[in-house]
Every structure is written in C-alpha cells, then in structure tokens.
Length: 211
Image (cartoon, rainbow, N blue to C red; front, top):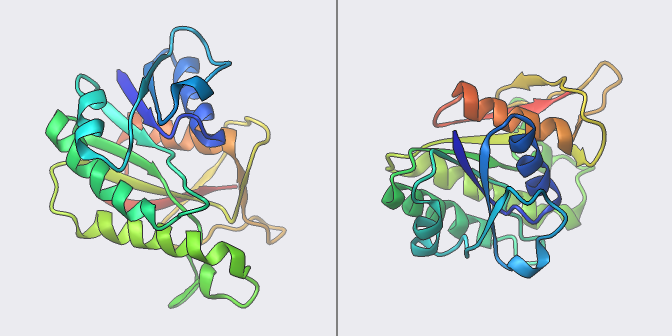
C-alpha cells in the first residue's frame, strides 16, 4: 500500500510517517517546506505541497492508494476548512479514493447536546482552533465527493508519549478512562489512524480514539 501524509512535518505527522514505516508501508511525506523536514528515514519520499491548493494536492497525491492528513494551523486555524475542501477536491482529481483525517476533540459530546468546547472549563485560547476543526468536520459531512473520508478525534489531551498499541474507539462522544481523564499519546493515535486506513471501519464518518 502506498500512502501520502499531508502535514507530515508536524509532531503527529512525523509519527504517522514512522508508523507507516513500522508496518512496511510505502509512504510519501507532503510538507509546505521541504527544508524543515529532516531526521526521518531516507526511504521516505518528501514532496512540497500547499494543502489549501487542490491542484497541488492532486499533483503530489497521484499514484497513491490512500491519504492521511495531520495538517494543523495554530495561528490561523480557520484555514482548516479550506484544507478540508482542498483535500477532497485534490484527492478526487488524483483518483485517491480514501482519506483519514486527524481532527480535534472539541466537537465531541460530553453529554446530550453539549460539546467539550462548550463546557465552562474549556480554555478560551483553544476555542478558535476547536471551532475551526468542528467547521472542517461539517465540511466533510456536507461534501458531495467520491472520496471516502474518516475524521478521527483524539481524547481531550493529545501529546507525545509512549507507543503502547492500546486504545479504545468511540463515536461522537468523548472517551474517558476510569480515573476521569481523556487522553491518548500521539504514538497510539497514529496507530489508530493507520489501523483505520488498513481496516476501513468508519468510512464517511467521525470516530474517536483514546484510552
């Protein structure tokens, strides 16, 4: 299987690339600036692409079986909506029929009708990105596309950590452990995303992966 990872220069994107290599998958890293992508195995092909440009997406994605996105934009999160549409349009033009997207946790529900991002303890600084991720999810859900997408939300806390190979899967509701925490390491979240690529268990839907 030949995969392309958009946003491969980020913390999660790099772990997705390494997880692909761990499984013996052929992988291309798509980044905005090739000069900033270093320290990854030499068998990884690296290409430059602007994920907001569907023509650029199509050009680098052609010939791949499936795509993953770990694109983030903390300073201008509203661009994530444009990225969502661009990926769908570009992958469709390139004949890539499957996309697995790393999304946000803010739009997950903690109770009936109440999203995590709407709770009193959700930090104001996090809200613009959480809203942008929610809007991107709406873009995927509303799109008329031949690309089978899956949007994967992590637990409330996603950070570098241990690769345990363990995680649970849920639907639109936040998963919490017995101690009340909601988290997953980037290493295990990468596993969950590549598992989705290989198993195609949640086409055209959002699910969550956490401990």
